Length: 89
Image (tube, rainbow, N blue to C red):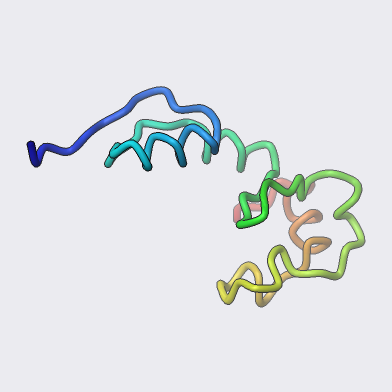
């Protein structure tokens, strides 16, 4: 029919993947914003709780395969500190 397909209320990553496969084009979704607010990074291999203790001293990048600014300039430990301090990211 050529019309865009819009979906509201998606709350989980798997839902985004499945609904995209089913042809949904646009989402009204709180998941990325809510997830970021809680200090979680969405990566190709899953979600990483950067605000958690396990990342406090981690010298690794968020994703070693990614070339974005966050992954190339900052470590998980640095981002952890910024999130804990409430810095504007």
